[in-house]
Length: 334
Image (cartoon, rainbow, N blue to C red):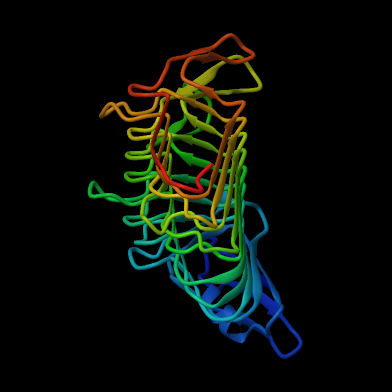
């Protein structure tokens, strides 16, 4: 199926075919409703003023990337995924809603790839319930939430497998230093996961998480970590984006802790390894890594926590509070 946006002459989405349809559609949602499970919907460049409900297995993919393909519904959730489905959403600028992407319960598999999710009043990505596999990869997630909060990624309960890889979560500069548009960090946490049940696996790898209004990565509740969590090779706090030509853009740390963990349960394990954690806690004297209540296993190894210097000689300052704060290691905790 093929769809295109407004071209200045017509508001038809474009020409589309499937095994049952040979027609033009007036909206992406209209195309979703006619698609067969397993179809791929390819969306041409344009600005689409609509909200989407995806309740069947399919792939929704732009042909020319998020730079040329925007979904802006004027409030409400922009992309809502629900049901026992396998869904991929790839290559969209998702802006102007409440939640950018809302993922409901009972999903089998959801991929959110190569999107620019920004300027939504609640969370950029909001995930509830449970599911089998959740992949969030190579997205830019900026400027979400109102002054009262709103996270870049908010997961109420981790799925069986969660992969959060290669994302820019927080402040972002669109363009060269002299003429780009800056997008602020998310108003709340960069990433918040309320509950990691026993038997689940969460991998957070090679993300840049900067200038968010609260913690960089937050496991906030006493139900936090009862499964397995690996946080590896991320930059959590200050970092510099170097352009191919001369020039660079510097981003500051998060306002709260770099990593905040409220509890590691007796079946839980968390591995924090190879991260750069600097210049966090700019509002209060919070910490680089905060862990409260260890009943399970915690490993912290080979991180730069505080001042460090990158390969270009750029210096980074320490966190405002402690580098690592650990309180209450209980019997059986390691």
